[in-house]
Length: 73
Image (cartoon, rainbow, N blue to C red; front, side, top):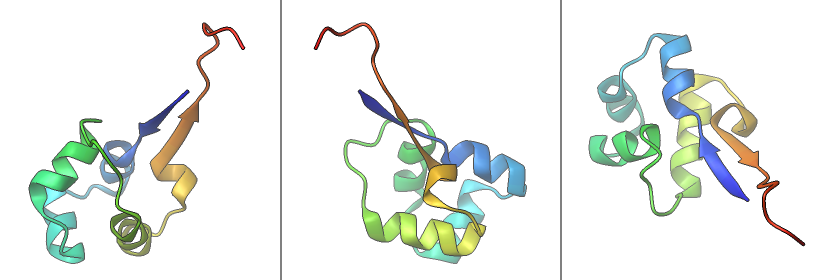
């Protein structure tokens, strides 16, 4: 099981840069970059609340749950 962050996809669809999102939300650019590159070690809910407000999207647009079918129960 894992989460796949899709912030980079939504930014591309909205034609918004990471820097512009940083300026509009107050979230540091390196943090946004980590989310976009799936390198974030943890997710800050407040950040995603701001992203959804600015980008006009839902949490399911930003995060996808991927079930690992290779693992046995």
